Image 1 (cartoon, chains in turn yellow, blue):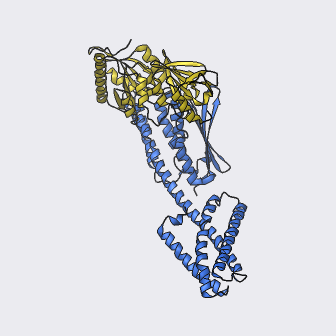
Image 2 (tube, helix red, strand yellow; image 1 turned 90 degrees about the horizontal axis):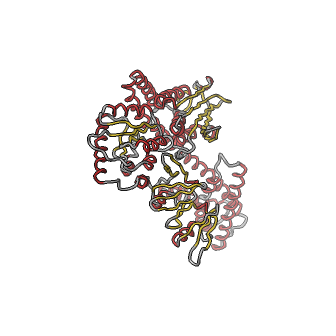
Length: 263
Length: 342
C-alpha cells in the first residue's frame, strides 16, 4: 500500500537506518521530542532497512550512506518510490548524488535539532505534494542510476524480491533481458527481476565487458561462445552454457567491433 | 629526448665545450698526427661535431642499464660494445673525410683518434650516470615532500572527526560521563597527531599509543562490533620510525573491514622484533560481498610510499587476502629496519 497519503494532523512514521548505535540513539532522541513523529523502525544495516521499509511502510526514512551489506544509495534503489528519504552522513561529497536521486534533504553529522525540524518540514511538504500530484515521477532505480557518477562503473546489481535482497556481482552476470519496465538478470542459472529499464542498466555497466546485442538483450562478452547465422539476414549469439540470444544488426556491428573481425 | 635539448643554456654550454674540444683536437692532429694546420682544422671541425652528438647516445643506454640494479658485468660489456661501435664509426668518418679532403689519415692519425674516441665515450658514460643520479635524488626529494604533505593531510580524517563528534552529541544526554571520556580520548588523539607534523620519526611506542587512542574512540562508536587484539613485543617499542605508519593500516581495517560486517569483528595488531627488523602485521575480517574500494587504498599507498622514501628496498609492505572457516581475512604486513635513537 503506497504511502504519501499524509494528512497534516497525522503522525509522520519514520525509519532510522544507521549502523552506529549512538547515531541512531541521537536521532531517536531528537525525534521523540517531536510529538508528530513516530519511529516505526530502527535498522543497523542495508538488508534490515529494505526489509523493515517493505514491512512497516514508513513515510520517511533517515538513511546513512556507508553501511554494511548495502549502502544508502542501494537501499534507495530498492525501496518504494513513495517513501521520502533524508540522508544522514558525515560525508559531504554525496550531496549532489542524493538530490539527483530525489532525496528530500541531506543532513551532515553532527547536526542540531533546528536543522532536523527544517528537514522534517521539507519531508512533510514533499509528502503532501506527492499526494496531490500523484505518484513519484520515476522509479527510484532510474534516479539512483542516473545519480551514479559516470566514471564509476557498477560492481554489483541489487535486486529486491519481497523483503529479500539479492546481490548480483556484475562478474557473475551472464546476460540481461528486457521485460517491459523490468530487466531480468541472468546469473548462475538463476534469474532476478528488477524494476529498471535496460538502457539505464546498460549505461551503468562497463562497456568493455558488456554489450547490447539487441533492443532487449545485454550480454557479458566473456560468456559468448560463438555467433551463428540464424536465418538469411539474422544471427544468434550462443553462450558458453548453450543459451541462444538474438542479435540485431546494430548489435552485430557492436559485437564485431568489440571482438574484432574474427567474431 | 636528451635533457640537454630541454634548455637553451645547457645546449649553448655544451656547444661551447665542443668548440673548445674541436680546437684541442686540431692541436692534437697538428702536433701528434703531424698534419698541416689547415688539414687538422678540416678534420677536427666536422669530426668533433659528429662525436659531440655520438656522445649523447649513452643517455639512453645508461637509463636502460641503471647502476644499482644491473649486473656490473652487463654494464661493462654493453658500454664497451657501444664505445667500440662509436669509436669505429668515428674513425670511419675520419677516413671518409680524409678521402674527401685528400688528407693522409694513416697510421699517424688513427691510433690517436681511436684512443681519444674511446676515452671521450667512457667519460660521457660516467657523466651521464652522474646526471641520472642527480635527477633521481631530485625526484626522490620531491616524492618525499609529497608524501609528507599527504601524510599531514591523512592525519585527521574529517569524517572520523565528524562521526566522533556525533557520538559525543549522542552521549551528552544519555551518558554524560562517557561523553566526557570520549572528549578526552579524542583530544588525546588529536594532540598526538597534530604534534606529528614536524617530526621525522617517532618511537614505535608513540605510534602504538596513537593507534590505541584511535581504536578507543572507534570502539565507542562501533560498540560491540569492534574488538581489538593487540600484541606488542616490548623489544620493539624503542624503534624509531616515520610517524603514522600503523595508524592508516588500522584505520583501513576499521573502515574496509569491521564497518562492512553486520556483526563486526576483531582487528589483530601484532608487532615484534625479528633480526633487527620491525615486523608488523594487521589482520581483520571483511565482508567479501562488499563493493571493493579501489584497492590498494590511498592510506596503504601513502604508507608504502613513505616506507620507500625512508628505507628504499629495506622496507616492505604486503597485503594478503585469505578465507578462514566462515569469513574473509585481510592481512597487511610491514617490515622495516628498526633504528634506535642513540
